Image (cartoon, rainbow, N blue to C red; front, side, top):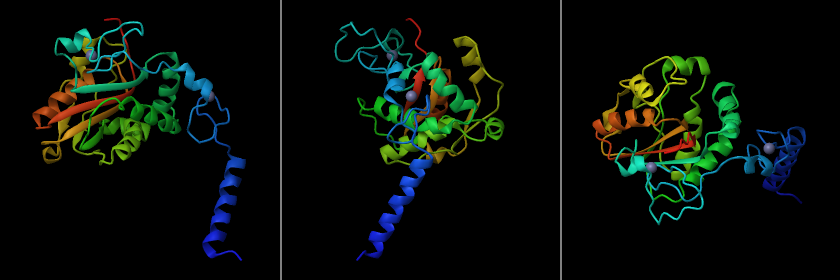
Length: 250
Ligand SMILES: [Zn+2]
Ligand SMILES: [Zn+2]
């Protein structure tokens, strides 16, 4: 005799197997079979330049593997007090491989990539003692949200907030629309981003430790500007985690 819950378990399992038969879990980048949907296959995983040690303990800038820099190495930028946030981590470097995951995710609706990207970002935070009160995706201007249909940073932020067991804040900071910053240098990017963010709910910012989430960090200008605005509103700390970061020789 089967119990009702036993029968429903069997039916569930049959349904799951049918779905897996019709739509087998596949690597979001190459389509190879994988055990869990949204996960990368081993070959694709090994193509990425995941950031390990040694790296800057503040901003996560990766140093060449053969350098012995002690337990808490700092890059020149952070050593001179110019880190955009209190702490930054990136899962991997921005290159042809990470670009091939990020661009379709950002512009072509490949939102399934958020699964492995957010998992890699949670992994990138493992060596920090960051304990945020709230996770905040870098805000997107309404106009861009309307055209794209989704905020890619929010898709990454949701599983990260869940991993920390804290809420995600999508509404306390608003971003004004400015045309794209593509291919501008650091000074132009900083100039272009100045004044685009506005805290509309200071009560949700004051005294909070905030973890910002974005897909890519280029010069850090967006983070610097958010830091200025959030600290002015009374945030106690502002951290950031991105999927990939541009790594320039310093
Ligand atoms: Zn693959
Ligand atoms: Zn640094």
